[in-house]
Image 1 (cartoon, rainbow, N blue to C red):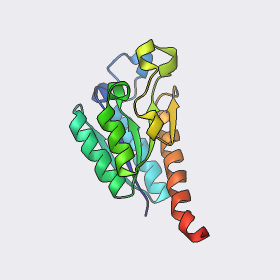
Image 2: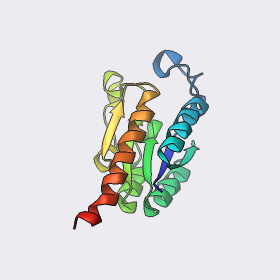
Image 3: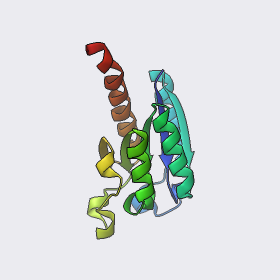
Image 4: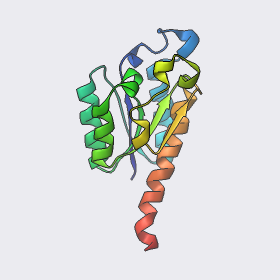
Length: 153
């Protein structure tokens, strides 16, 4: 059975209340419910975490990556600042997909640079909560490809 960890960074606990004109009115609980249904339909074990603490996110990335799980990560502001998250993704060998609710490239210039994108298998931004579903699908496809690789040898 494949496993995917959905990791959410700072302020995402305020989703639905914080700047709804940018992030929408759906809550993080709404996102989680949608992904749990998707995971159940696909036979995927889902772990869902939100933390405002960078260290907790680093630990979660390490644990998921070392266990061979995929990661869908919305690191929030840590996207633009966290070398620690970048190193955790790279060091654990995690298959990670970076997601954002808003189109970060259409916003302030400091949001245009991601510290974690270079070690992620892809980035999805600007589709609201659908970014998570797209990230889940991309992560699951990558996990399935990785599982098939040894059989091809």
